[in-house]
Length: 54
Image 1 (cartoon, helix red, strand yellow):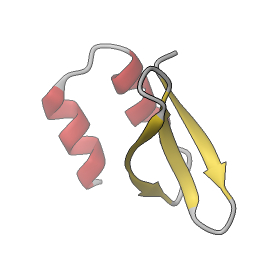
Image 2: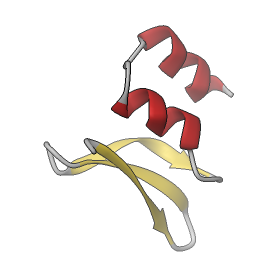
Image 3: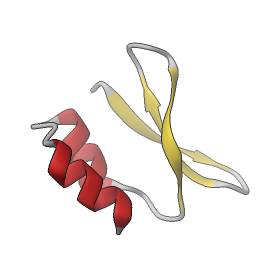
Image 4: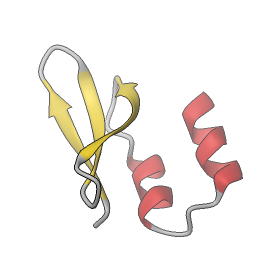
């Protein structure tokens, strides 16, 4: 997988980009399943933006 979610104590869930070895995006209060599926799958920009807004 290219993107994985890591629980950061006291902050929430962060998405880690394994190829570039850096955080992607902001902290999420719950596990971002749909966003990870999109990032690791079809990578449709419109869907990613929709998921980030929700």
